[in-house]
Image 1 (cartoon, chains in turn green, red):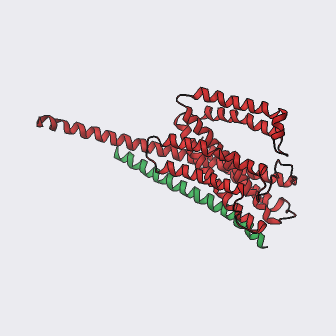
Image 2 (cartoon, rainbow over the protein chains, first blue to last red):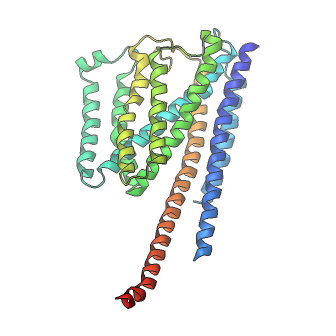
Length: 43
Length: 299
């Protein structure tokens, strides 16, 4: 039973890392879109 | 292209769900380790995906460095390495050096893949896109390598009784590989020099040399890390094999999608930077023109 905890811990850790990375990509996309909008307004 | 991304996302999601079901329900339990061995279905595909991404980074970096002066020369050198490797694999003295269990045909195929991979990347990506591909593959590769370094100790604790085996050559080399690519990303993030892209490409070329060392370490050294089961003469239940390959396919598709998004992000980032540079240039030009009559009148 104890070993199964390690199995689920590994699977959860994998998806936490992937979700965190995808989150950073989404944040960076939003920031760039905002900058593009501001550049458009400047023109 | 816009439709392809959601279609691929759905296929990847289905594949990941199917792979998870295969890993947790269909694949048989290991006689020695019990259910905890199922970590292999996330640990090994993540490692293979990381190695593939670092290899893409290596090829893109070489092409980026060679693009101006030695493009044709490097291309022919890579083709020569591939052909010489295939021929050498079938020579008896070389075959004696190949570790037991490693098939010469697999080694020959690997050598054949080197020029094929190089030409394919050169055909698909050119100029600045090669640099974007390099940074993309390195960053996503670091994510997958982080997963390897996290899931490995979680698996080791119940099986070996320790989280980490200090001095184990494969574990140490994998950590070194991760550190090399983290330093590559730090260099790219914080250096503003005009030479950053070239320096980073050179670092990537040396860093990628660690990939074959990591892969071959368990063939040439006795380590705490298990000796090769896959392709190393070890036996594996066909259902385990099937699940492992499905998991790898799912993670490859997932990695491809992330790379695609990261590539678009980097392209957009460079467009914004270019637009900022143009804006400041136009601003500087306008202010110079405005100050001209004043300077003339001062004379």
